[in-house]
Image 1 (cartoon, helix red, strand yellow):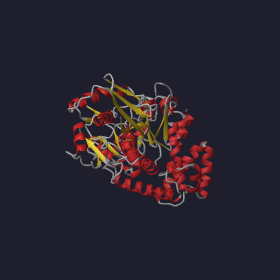
Image 2 (cartoon, helix red, strand yellow; image 1 turned 30 degrees about the horizontal axis):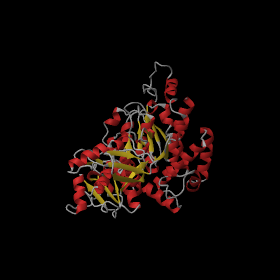
Image 3 (spheres, helix red, strand yellow; image 1 turned 120 degrees about the vertical axis):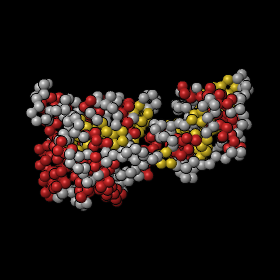
Length: 512
């Protein structure tokens, strides 16, 4: 007789159903696992054997075969331990055979019979709920699984003995409850930054419309401080966004204690990050930093210090909002719709714009052009806002803290985003939430300027040699500025400010 247990295999954030078939047959004692298992799955038989012995059970001296179907789907990870063990326990009568039917099972076993947490419990729970099944998972992941649905049956155990007692009715495990992770520590605030009013304004515009932002300024001017405070003015995640972000974090194994958070992600990788680390990939095609920043912020400090190949790999995700990782045997797509916030010095030493400073490497303009030439034009063209962040003077530092902080700015950003959400919902664009996501045809309808604004835009497009992408990005920023003002139509003043945010990009391109 063959005992069947359900589990999953992960392809990106999708959990594909896998049938674990356990057969205990007469023959010489053996324990074989087939069905394209990787090294971690092949080693599961030793963990299962030790965990069963520690739980007071012994494997029969017979031929044990475990098949992971479909056999042509690669099986990776340690979460196959628990379904294999439960299948064996049902086959030898340690648990009722019909009790484990109708469940999706995943979990890693310790040698003492304990069940350790694994990655991907939330997508597995969502997949199980869609198939009308319950879920058996580690106790540490129960709160995470509870977010899938209030109706799904969840059994979260700490050990194999607890599971056996639960199914025998001697120890009933209660259903875990979803948890929210509390954010501790001192909260950052825009009021901490003195001066830099124009940079704060650009930060507010970027947050309101989900626009990409590049800050250029000397060392110590506050670029990193500004970027670190961007999450404090962003609205919390909506339920749909929370689910998307949490599924990626779950697959990456970055959910602690099964508790989710509604704060938007903020990822700040070091400039030595490789392409697989940033975009995703590796042996198991794991999500990279851009996917972990989905619906949040990706901050790249010292932008020119990243390798050109790594930076250029961001060009396609910035346009499509997703990244496809292709391997010889499979292709995985991860969501990657993020706000790119980057910071850089004007030149290698950072003092090219200082009054009276003469660079030893040559003229200041040439030194800055050589440094900025590390960035490709197509990448810069995808950044909506280019601003210069000047050095803060001592006179700015001795001033009292500004009266307006993150709370006031966040309120304006929330109002602007609400306007955008209502607009795109009325147009039937459910997948568009911010102006940065609107396509060209939609922009021409919602960002139609008045006569004076059209004349300004026509002249600026000719003088600044705007590409089609640059033209549409100016319209997106202008539409966001109008939303911040509560204006129904884009005016000349909105287009003028939007064009000013691309003037620095035009100067960088001419210098290069």
